[in-house]
Length: 440
Image (cartoon, rainbow, N blue to C red; front, side, top):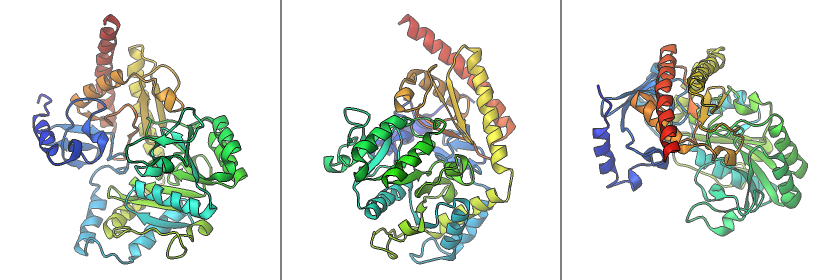
């Protein structure tokens, strides 16, 4: 069957009548790559299916949560039972305590946990807590790291890499942005300079230990240790945003993988098994400032709802029951990346391939990529060509050069072989793109 998106195009036009841009999260619009986004009808295992009848090997996985694949039978069975008992109570349940226990056992730095409904809620709440605990106002973030869409973190760098922030979106007040300092990821000297200038006013440093929102970036050896040392020296809190990397790169997240102990951690995605969820937690003495234990207010009607807790519990238990889970998942991801890289090299493309655990990504540049500025050197046109060629062959990647991709335990060697073969055809299209660029 020829690849078509006729029904999706009609659905997209209709959606634009009622939803801004036709989508409920901007990257879904395909604005970064052009074309029509497939409207998804269903998903199962390693595949998603659109309303036009196209079937795709899925490496987006709902942007990371679907580590077991879509519609895992045991997760669905647990959810089905939970639905019969009601969808929300607005009252305590045993499920919340059990999921919190599993998380604290897996991530020892999280002595207490508070559940919310999204990663944005988690990071927003944890910054309020950090400011209250330290009685300081300034926050340090890193260019290219995304921590949700609340005002404090929708901030870009000012005139230099170590200047106070300026708003990155209309509607963010200058007074809020001015308390956020942005530095380049992987630049220990820039962070040192910031602390030398503002150290007594910095409440916290918030960082994706493995950034996945400027493409997948890996920390340089020793970098996270330097970040930890600087925060300790100046009495600031270290916040790991592991919404993406938590239970994804290792059972205990990036902090287990790199052996770093943050003061506070944000989680999401995997811990909800595909349902809306977020969480933040950390040292007991800090977390006990959260109401009702302490004076820092944070609440949510659907926080800890029984469906998200059930899906999260089922997911984490299934992972924990398989001691080889992460080893096998990493091995499959490595095989995929090696195969795709071999196809690229066959065309003479020395693109940058990054992988950590079951997260991976390609930068369409022959220069090393280690921060946001170097990521921006990527040839977006070449990526867009590659993306559409893969989509037409039934491989669904994130519709942006600046997003990570994800493997699930439902992916098979057949899926990987098909993806590698498709990438060869896609790189041929990229080669043609470069030939046209050269003659223009």
